[in-house]
Image 1 (cartoon, rainbow, N blue to C red):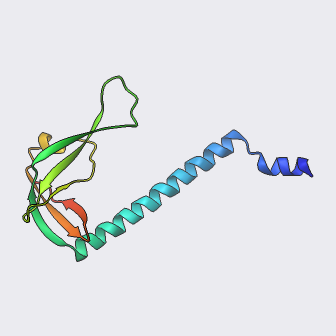
Image 2: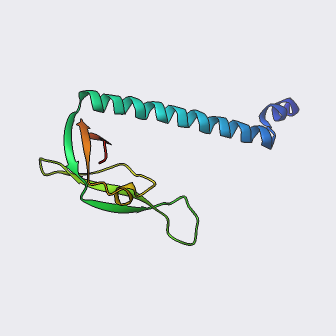
Amino acid sequence: MTEVLHELISINPFSALILLVLLDIVFAVVKSLIYGRNKKIIMNKGSVYEGKIEDTVYVKNKFVKSPGATYDYRYLVPLNDGRTVNTEVYYEDFVSKDNISCCNVYEYNDRYYFTDFR
């Protein structure tokens, strides 16, 4: 009985790796679908503001193990009513590279989506 149970529980490393990769793919797809659905809700039901990009915040990337510091970028965007909101994290500093100064901000239930960077 214990031999049969041991055979059912044991899995070879290659199969475990394939299973891990498949679970990672499923997680990425589900995360992407949820992000797309939330984006659509925010853009359809939310109000639109034009915001000027005020400052760049450097966010240290935790996952890169390199001797030099690796940063991701987040931008501060003040809205017309005096609030300042943070964009999501971007992997490139495209604002300074492409000389971008403003964007459209969609807001719905204290959730934000940023688009039309110009």
